[in-house]
Image: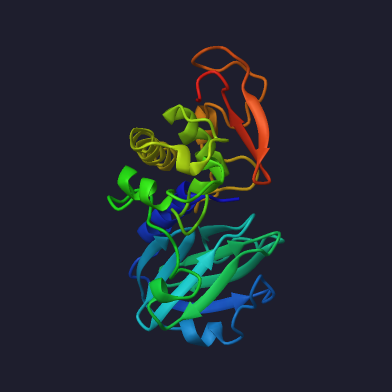
Length: 271
């Protein structure tokens, strides 16, 4: 599933290619997603100019002159900018053609993604209004985490993956950040002290920034706006390395299910 670095990588590439371009036509081959795509989306977007592309949580916000197209990539979705005459692939469900011979295609084999048009402030939309802070902002800090964790007894790994606590820290990056911070993922959130939260907030920011610079993590489905794989997988310290030696102490990396998700950690280095 695309996580924050993958969505941010896609956002940056698409904005560079499509900012200030005007929509000429929209073709929807499949309207049935997690929520149906508006049947009149083609008429809505026609002749509108794309002002900016932004991101909130894992949503891409295409800010047009008359509203915002909100896109979530779901479990397997991807966006690619291609020439309009590029042959359509099986799961290319939405095509938005812009001037300058550019076409944005939304590919989603499992159709768990979302394509939603809104005229309201997208940050006040019901899907975004209750989201926690962005992890790469000053608002996300040790003091903030300590405060919101005060009465939370769930595992710290589950805690930092809650969307109302912080957005975009998915399974891969939660495992990596906890390893970097030296914190066992099973510990109750309210047992983490301020110094540990300081290490953890710093590790989350560092891991996410490194992943963004590397273009995201390709495990199964992720490709960027050009269709290229991300390369952060080559730098993963614990995720997917069960039974392999820890890079720090050589003890075998443990794998455990925490909150229905596979978790990887070093029992020796993470306390």
